[in-house]
Structure formats: C-alpha cells, structure tokens
Length: 465
Ligand code: SF4
Image (cartoon, rainbow, N blue to C red; front, side, top):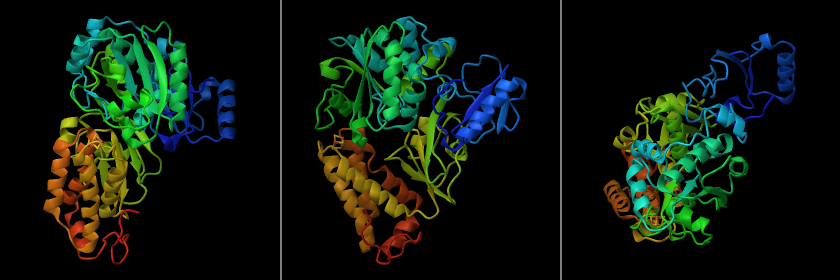
C-alpha cells in the first residue's frame, strides 16, 4: 500500500486505487472504514479487486501513469503531464525512475525540445511563446544563469508541485543544464503548504542534481505570481513591484543574474517531452467556480472548453465562464478550443483556469468585483494600471447610477492593455470588456435600474463590496 498525491479531481477523492496484474479498480470518495475494507479485501483476493469498485480499467502492468478511469474528471483521456498525480508517490525517487525519469539529456536535445515549447501561465516569462529565444538570450548574457520555478497561485502548478514534484524538478534541472546554470529556485505561495512541503522533500531526495535547489515560500498576494515580482519576493523585498523591462529576467534576473522564469506546468511539459517525445499537445485546465468540486484535467489543445467543464458538475444552470484566470475573459460559449490562438481569438485567457458562473450570478457585479480587486491589489508602479483600474471600477459602478459608457470603458481597457508594464495591468480589463460584449443586455438593464439575475439591490447601488 502506498500513499500518492491528489489526482486534482476533488469530486472523487479520497480515491483508493487497487492495482493487480494490469488491472486497476478505483474506489471513489472513500471513508477511512471503506478504505480499510477495500485494502483488506484486496489482500485476501487480489483477483476480486473489482468487487464494489466505482470504475475498473485494464492496462499494461507497470504502467507509469494514471490510466483513464470511467469517473468524472478522470475519463478525459490519457494524462501525460498530470500522469504522475494520484499514481506515483510524489517524493519517492524510485517511482519516478521506474517511470523513465532522471535521464540526463544532452543540452542540445533539451534546447531543441524547448525551442517549440510554449510557456504556460501568466507566471511564466514565456507565456504562450516558445522558450527558445529567451534561453538563447540567457546563454548569451553575462553571469551565471539560474532557473526560477514559479509555482505561485495556479491550481495546476500547485498540484504538480504537490503530486508530481520530480516531474517539475527534472524539467528545471534539464533547463539549468541547457543554459549552463547551476542553481534552481522553486517559488510557491505560502498558502500552498502541501506543495511547498512536497517539493522541498523531493528536492532533498533528488539523486545527483546538476544544479542546487532552494525552495522559497512567497506572499500569497495574486500579483506575487508576476515573474519579476516573483524575483523581488525571492530576493526578500517586502514591497512587491514589477520590474521595468527591458531588460527581461533572461538578461538581468535573480540578483542580477540571467534567469529563466517558468511555471511548473512548463517544466513538467519539458520533462515529458524529453522522455516521450513531444511537445505534448495538451493543456492542464482547472475547472472551478460554481461546481461541486474543482477539477484539474488534461485535454488535447483541440478539445473545447465544454469538454473541460463536463469534467466537473455545475452547481446549478450554466450561465457563463470566466476563462483564463482572475483576469480571464467572460464568455457564454464553451465551443472554443484550448489552443492559445483559439482562446486569444475569442478574447479569452490562457491561464488554464475555467471559472464556471451559474445562472444566479450577476455578470455586472462579477466584473465589477474583478475591477475593484485589480484597483486594490495592483503594485502601483505604472499609471495605466494604477489609475486605469481605479477608473474602471468607478465606471462600472457608474452603470448602477444609470450611466453606462461602453465606448469609454472599451477605450480605457485598450489603453491599459497597451501601456501597462506587466501582465497584471494588460489583463485587468479583460473581464469587463468581454462581459460587455457577451452580456450587453445585462449592462443595459442595470443602467435602467434592473438586475436580470435579481442579485443587485433595487436601486442597484454599490457593486464593490
Ligand atoms: S501593470 Fe499594474 S501590477 Fe504591473 S507594474 Fe503596472 S501597476 Fe504594477
């Protein structure tokens, strides 16, 4: 019997998997008593492991990753990058090695694999861009390169650090080798205690690492995930402000050294691509919001958002989704593929988070709160974001005073997007802009003093509580 990490699909956990001779039985939502009964029954009769199981699957014996199971959220196909989650012991080197891990790939092979791999998440300095050019710049810069693993704030990143830390560390080690670096720093939110603890233990047990590994827990604020604010936090600066760019971290990063800043997702994709060939054309997506339990799934880029939302049970009637994290785009349509270009074309974000909004949600209230959050938590360094988010929150509040200036909001968001220093300000207006396009009639109804969802008070005042 071995304890593994979470699969990322909360609705089926605690999950007990019993594997025997190329066959795995899954027992979902186990109480301690049921888990003990399942284990005892399996010990008595290994051939009877399917008795009472919620799902059973046949697979090759010694399979290195979680097989697809006929359970909501775990039936979405072959998990490659999330495959270790819920299957291998997170901090047991032997499990990772048995799955083909810890291979030392030539630096040129690593650089080839990185050339086409696109960074995942807003915490990645190469968000939606291939890594290759940034790596070349780091190699050419003065100083000893280092690698920062920015695992701050994204649920799939926290899951990988907690359930598959060797996958992430192996990608980081490969990246360090490829740019001639000898130091890796893993950075995560202090709120993600399990992730911090697991990656710390895995770093201590990593066999013969080429680069030293430090683990730093940073402040939980949302903005602390921004790549240059992550560097500030790692350096111990209490006031978190984004750094001016250029130069980017690849030239002047941690303590002035050339630095690669990648998310755990990016580095896990790199590790899997090196081991299995790639790059993997899948995306790790977390469905959250008005659902029974959040679920992190892995889907082909060609799959639609609807396939991701199907992996979770919507709590009520589906109304809309905010796609792309805190400052994602609001949409009614889930008929959009996960590939970054499809998401961008639909005005949605690529952070890998789909927040479901059920029928009783008020969209105007929702985006008003997002704007208010942006105005209260930006770092204050640049005017377009500092003043723009304040004005955006005010203009959305004006809707409740029967003053809806869609063109003015659109123009404001455009300026923020084009002239903010970092992704925080570039993205902060996206919820409002996309919601105005998808739910125009709701904005107009509010401007006439009515909330179609029936959530806002009669006089529709004060949206930013
Ligand atoms: S965009 Fe916002 S968070 Fe980024 S530097 Fe400007 S004020 Fe700070």
